[in-house]
Amino acid sequence: MSLGLAQAYCVQAYIGLGGNLAGAAGNAADTVRWALAQLANHPSMALLAQSALYGSSPVDAGGADYVNAVACVATDLAPLDLLHALQTLENQAGRERPYRNAPRTLDLDLLLYGDCHMDSVELTIPHPRMAERAFVLQPLADIAPHLVNPQALAHLRLSQGIWPL
Ligand code: AMP
Image (cartoon, rainbow, N blue to C red; front, side, top):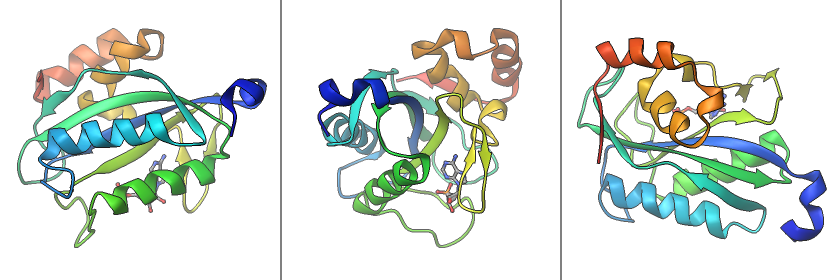
């Protein structure tokens, strides 16, 4: 895709990145940085913004602390095609799914896709749990403060560990 040519047809999407296992790209922080580079180099995406990297305590899961970030991309991919592109990156990073909420090398969540609201078997947008997670809202607030309620984030931070890396 030529993003210059197709800009009028592009949508801004927000992607949550996280992981807590070493994989092909290195440790969890290396893997998140690798994924950000893949988004930047993807032929159907332009990376518009990326947050700082954060450490976070596992929520609804065990295992090591997580590394998280949020990215904003412009894309001409349809929502499901974007989800599949993200899943391809997860697989390239060595993602395995032995059980629900298992530790992972890379998790890529499609948080927001323009002002799209959809709920299908494969994809729900906005991401159904994003508003409950400090590890999503804190990095999202870095790059899109207008999308985050600061009081809600402050409240989540009382019960969920998150720190800048
Ligand atoms: P996991 O990667 O284990 O967190 O779960 C991904 C699953 O959630 C996949 O089966 C997706 O089809 C589904 N899913 C539903 N909505 C979303 C979304 N907004 N972003 C990422 N995965 C989603």
